[in-house]
Amino acid sequence: MRALALGINSEIYYAGYDGVFRAINPDGSLRWRYGVGAGMDKPPVVAEDGRIYVTDRDGYMNCFDHSG
Image 1 (spheres, one colour):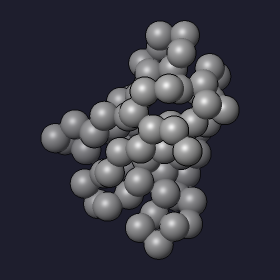
Image 2 (cartoon, rainbow, N blue to C red; image 1 turned 90 degrees about the vertical axis):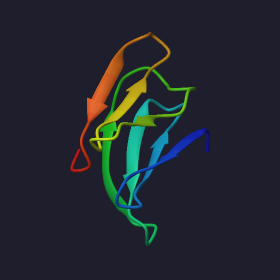
Image 3 (tube, rainbow, N blue to C red; image 1 turned 30 degrees about the horizontal axis):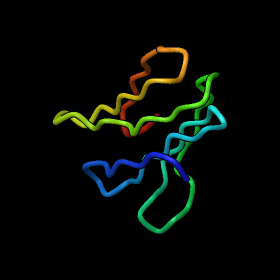
């Protein structure tokens, strides 16, 4: 496990070295996942409006909402 953030609906957002960004439900089940390419080594940021921002090791920024 590398970098986590807590969403506004108690989802857990996980940025992994494997290049897959995951949203985990409060009960521990997978909500959604998205391959961003390069691995991620910095935690995601959850904005006040609920959008989630994450950067990969190549410097690209991705933006998600709680539904992916």
